[in-house]
Image (tube, rainbow, N blue to C red; front, side, top):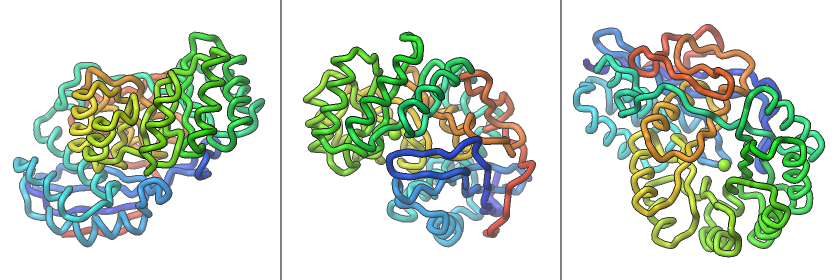
Length: 367
Ligand code: MG
């Protein structure tokens, strides 16, 4: 199965309500879609989300990296040389992890189709579904508490609470949500780098003192501040997760070596695809660091790829793959679907994606 052409397109999907974190706000998903076409007509689908404030990757840089650098190196290559293709993707250009992830996902989709297996089965998974948590954007405490109640009534049992604006209000937010929902509902707190070390310790110690039953706290301080991430971790009893602080296997090694965090949140857009995600997972496991999986605000293509990864691993603590629950309509035919609080993967070969109903705008085709 030889690669004949690679198409790049933009996919826009409106959200049900705006998505607001400590560092950004948006009301739609805008992905770059990659379609790798082969000589036998099979198409491998991948996608990348542009989150310049987190990955440094913009729509323009993702398109340029794929169109001008990565894709030309893959044309004419055979899918049975799979690991060599992944190596080409990872070494074609420095950084640009989102562009690499889109191509890596499409190559995995193709390999699974070539093997006539759903991707999750090819990766070694036996079950095609996983529970996802659901995100509550940072707003006034009262509004967040009401939203929490609503989401629990809809069947979600793990809530991801976005905080990180200021310590006093964040304590109030978490407290209001906890008081408004059953104690059995799990709460994950994500500061998205919004605190400094002192604020983080103040908030987390309050969570502990008031028994707010928070399962973990993600990325309390700035991404590149491993010293203070470790300081926060050493100063509290709560489970501290590195998200924006861990992009690569090298980051995971540094975190493990210096005992920086209790957990790592693996995301394809940060690490450059499923192959590198696997490397991070194994480093973390070897160092007894817990892994959760997450994603950017991205289309169900990336969600399907990360779900395939997550169900193939025995030690994933949480899956934060909720963009599929935040979009108004899913324009993708086939692929991952949300049922209650579970993401279900298709049982067709690859990611099970058959095409698009709407929202796709072709940018270029490399032959
Ligand atoms: Mg996070």
